Length: 182
Image 1: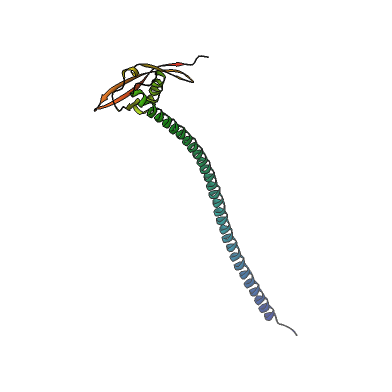
Image 2: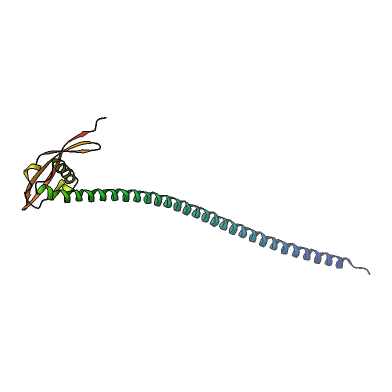
């Protein structure tokens, strides 16, 4: 069988048209694939950015937690130190108050020695305002310069009594301090 030139030309045109349609279809597929690849790269970049930001947020939160824990530990240590100081001060105050309660009746009955009067002066000086209230008129024998010996040296006090608002008060003034000589 023999084909004419027109049939050959028509078959060539059909073949060329089919090939051009295939190329157009492949070009469209390639454009779509490139667009999908670009979109997927953008999505991957966004997700990586979110991941890295999350990592930095987590590390910042961990560092803040560590600093907060360190601050908590420092505050807890400081609190225990302050509580120990307060406990020692409260025990000193209780001892001072007990000394005052024990010595006031003796001093008021004029039975106290100069050493007890010096202990009283030292205890009164530790009170707020360096003053205590007395139940009555104090004896004149304690209103003088008294020496109280401590481990650090000798302290000199003067006890002064006075009536304020109808109540007798006893003031203790520190007038001298000598350090212990080695």
